[in-house]
Image (cartoon, rainbow, N blue to C red; front, side, top):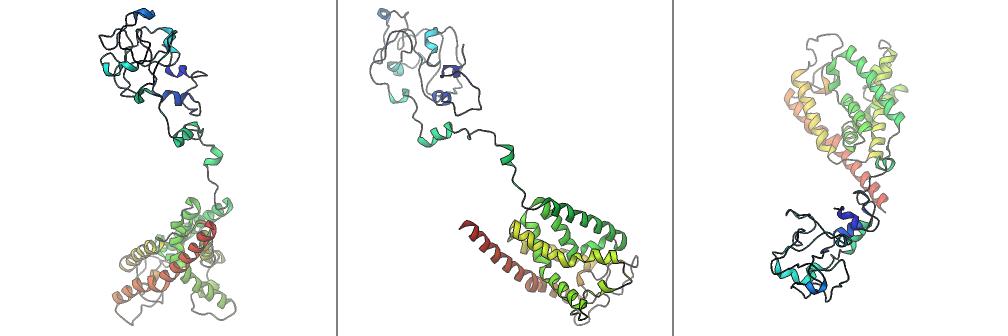
Length: 365
């Protein structure tokens, strides 16, 4: 038996090209003529018309059986025995003889007979909505997307990604050898790693977290560095950058404190600002401060090696070598955990959120 799709003009063309009108015809309810009937109103034997004793309401004979009630993909078994060739021109479905109430609508699809009268509504071709027909006719409904169009263009240059990553790798290897792994508990080093995640994934959350965390603190570093260049240090944060006892290579690596916040703001501008960054970075910073307070050495504690970091993230006081004596240590830690989000993180979050909101409005206008 021929494939049902061959009843369509042009023959079967496969499954993918849904723009072919074959699919619309397959969704239509077409009934195959069973031998013995030629009229809409007839349910008796049509021997005088030259059709071999086919009854519809009274003990039908024949081998092709299916049902309209279940539609095109009926689960009821089909007996696909001998079918007159003339009946394959317009379909392959027939009414079962055990449904006499529908036999008055048998359709002649071959021979000289023509249907008389209007068929019942449930036997008429299915009228698809306009939107559905457009969807079926559109080749984009199931079409495979163009590989060149499916790959979104990167918002960051490849040179930036590769150069930034190589710098981070070199810094990590050198700092690990000189200062040990605990050096990477510092906020600035964590922000550096978040920047790597941001440039490769291009997800705003990573750049947003890093910018919220270090934008203002590193701004103070920048001001102090520029002041030291002209002989007027502000806070003394960058005195080590002018220490001749420290190699120029090490000081060059540490100069990332100056340009990293600028790069992070650029990434936020390109990728957008994620408003979850405030709480995400705050939770991360609290965890890092607790690790530095309870697990890492403080000022005056014995060190495993000379360059081992101590008083990381200033959890014991603003001086890296001397613990503060203004208040109990845990009170200082609590004040730090509350003060940093309030004084540094929240203002940065507010500014970046406002700038991002205006930028979005301009793009939508």
